[in-house]
Amino acid sequence: MKRRRQLAFLLIALLLGAALAYIFRPASVPVETAIIAKGSLQETVEEEGKTRMHDHFIVAATVAGKLRRIHLDAGDTVKENEIVAWIDPAPIDPRQQAVLEARLQTARASQKQAEALAARANADYAQAQIDLARARQLFQHGIISQEARDKAATDDAITGQQAQAADSALHAAKSQVEEAKSALLVYHSGPSNLPTAIRSPVIGRVLRLYEKSERVVTPGMPLLEIGFTPRLEIVSDFLTRDAVRIRPGMPALITDWGGDMDIPARVRLVEPGGFTKVSALGVEEQRVNVICDPTGPTDGLEDAYHVNVRVIVWQGTDVLKVPASAIFRFQNDWAVFLVRNGRAHRTIVQIGHRGAADWQVTAGLKAGDRVIVHPGAEIDGGVRVKEYKSQ
Image 1 (cartoon, rainbow, N blue to C red):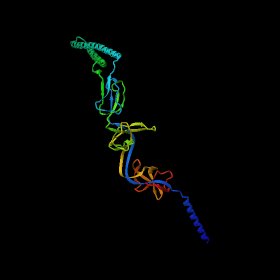
Image 2: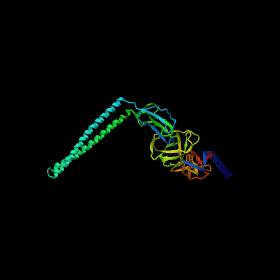
Image 3: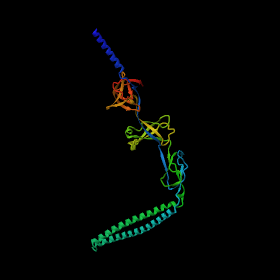
Image 4: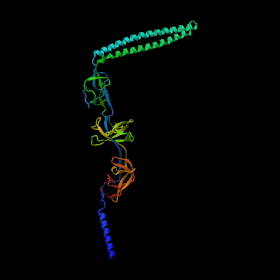
């Protein structure tokens, strides 16, 4: 009887311990899971960009004068060879004309002086040549010494150089006279006093006006910018570490431009030279411009509009993929929490290409496996979990 009682008490204690262990066991952690499956995957790089006309033309003043008011506005269309501006000749400044006339008189006086000096230098050189020829004959007959002959040769060389210098000075004086004459042409009556027409080089639209009101302009001053509207391109600056993966001909998408649908595009050029750009956080970054050509309709887009550019650097159709939110770094490897028999198991995986939402798995998982997405700090290997959502 005593042994039976002991066995009964032991059995009751075991049952009570088991009941307490069951009651106070750790609760299962609710987790969100996703099913590993095969499908299509795209690896992209994305940056902000802006539109621009492929062909820009800066129309500038060709002559100095007074610009008439331009009656065009930004957005107006112009035809090829259409007159877009008029420039009247610069008004005559009596003081400036007097200065230029005085400069011409000075240049002519300098020319006369240079002519006289050149004539004298050439005459001295001609006489030195005669003296040298006579000295050589006298030296052959022993009438003069070798020293006298050498002196005649030296005089000949010196006067020859002086004659060349005088001729150069005369040429410079003549050029100064021509320059002074050219400066006075604007004040002469004739065709140069007629207004000058500035014409559009191509058919297109006025993008911006640099000068609209009347003012005095100089040659080369920009007046307006014209864009060839049928050719619109997208320029965006990528980090150089992303740009090295981009090649001409790669497909791209123009997103976040204000329309309902993304615009397909294709990479035309990765510029060969990079540049330094300071980010919003104050970090210097090396970037390079990537040029894309839209291959779909761009209704509504104009020059210098903001867009996002997403370049597809790789894509596959039968790819085993895992949500990027399920992957985390464990020591030097990538890992996920695999759910089996209600528990989380840390599993090392190997990653291939990386998409925006999913990554390619090359080893460690198979189709049909369930992994925890967004694992929290309470998740660890062996922890009981309860799935509340599956995909």
